[in-house]
Image (cartoon, rainbow, N blue to C red; front, side, top):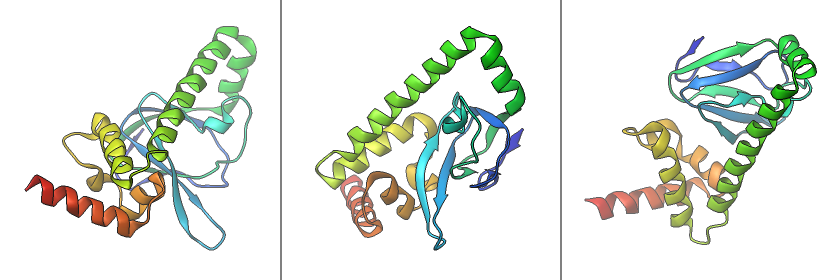
Length: 169
């Protein structure tokens, strides 16, 4: 299945299949009761989502939206869970997938624990470049989303991006 930028793969609270992202990028948005949307994760090629449903079914934690044109395989939940029961190698493969996700989360924590806001932004930009070059992070995410992802206010992100642009001119 092909999902174009801005299209929704699934919505928070729904239940359904799992998905394998072949190419592209997805963002996971958590919608709070007051309607506020918060960026909680970026899904990169090779990931199977939702992560919290890889071992047992659960409703979708957030809403998945394509950041760029993305190719996605649909993995029917019944087939996925049956294969886990029948094939011990699948469980090992799943453990490796979860291990890789933990490593990615460690990188996120490293980004978030940078003391200087400019360093947080630089680390995120470097990580994104490996997935979206020649586009830039601001072609893909709003300043609000960038701030949510690295724990900064939108105004701070705006100031840092302006300073980067001035320094590059």
